[in-house]
Image 1 (cartoon, rainbow, N blue to C red):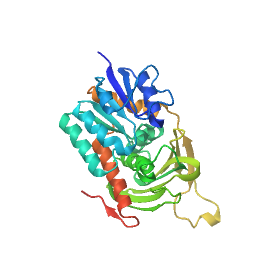
Image 2: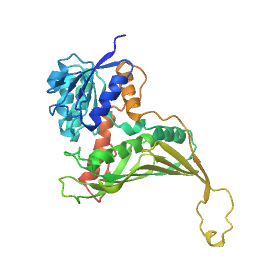
Image 3: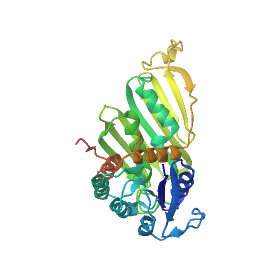
Image 4: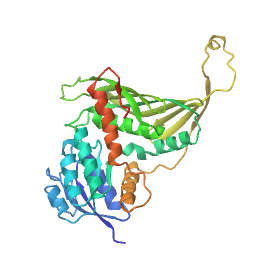
Length: 328
């Protein structure tokens, strides 16, 4: 079978990594790269750096990865859909829900694979976490909390921290819990003088009753990527920066310390840090995209799912401080 001819639009931070993985992916050949801003980092190698999406399409590509600023996603995706090119766009799917819906409709009408790069679903720690939750190892899930903090990335100019980073946590939480958001509200702040928010505290509830909480900012000197799932048998802690997963079991040993006996909750039990294979998330994500295009079983994140995540984030931003229902 001939390899899929791949094109890449955008050679910025994420585009550089996409180029590397696409070159190494079985069944895929990177044949064209386009970026109106050129290629200052030499990502293209021997390939000519094309000027725009039209030039990329003219190379006869089968699949494309779009890694340009969010406001350009819709224009590129609609042109790719019209040309019959299966496409993965980086998250968020689009700058507005209306734009995202037009993208979903276009790829559905054309019978093409339309995917969104919500890479955290392919993080080994979160994949292991989801598997263990589904196997009942924590019992009933009560709460999922995430913290995603760090300094401002200069690559982001057209969206705030909610769409750029909180969208990761919204998507991974719904995916790990296998339940959609039914309500959401948030508090935001803009402390750095930029147009968009750089801090958000988002709270919500999933359809299965799980309470969720996300603390996200671009204002912290430390980088933190943590997901905590609390349930009836203990708590899982996933460090997605390192790909580590740890389980803190509820204690089964009687507490003899008198001042602690008044506490009627759980006590500390065994702590287990799991060992499991840790593959690069971007490689697993692009493999899933390739497999979806080839008609194989795949866990690719669809544009419909990406639009749902954007709707949750938009709802949180639309009414800060007051609950917004997301029940269809």
